[in-house]
Length: 115
Image 1 (cartoon, helix red, strand yellow):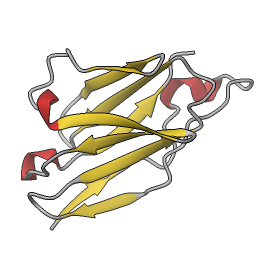
Image 2: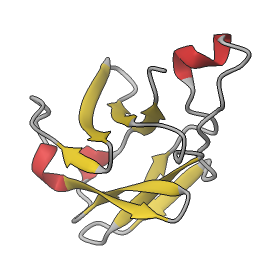
Image 3: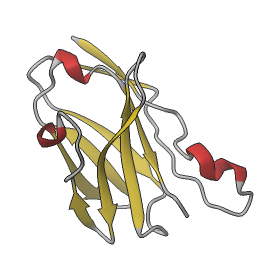
């Protein structure tokens, strides 16, 4: 089993803007089986054209995994595990999915909107 912490709120910088709607992540942590699938939900995304997903390891910096632009998924960033991640639309949220969990996926995952 692998514990994958997720951020409770994922507004990073936009939390400073009082009028901005917030994106939320419901899961505070996720335990996944090595070789299994894991997913993180980013809610409140209907009003946004751009959603970014980042990975943050304990001793590292934020690494961009992918961006959702008007519903299209782009993962052409230089993330060493970029092919391990996908995103899917789920009603009023987007889910970041890890196709096959590896020990190297242990990290905190954040969704963020620059608006």
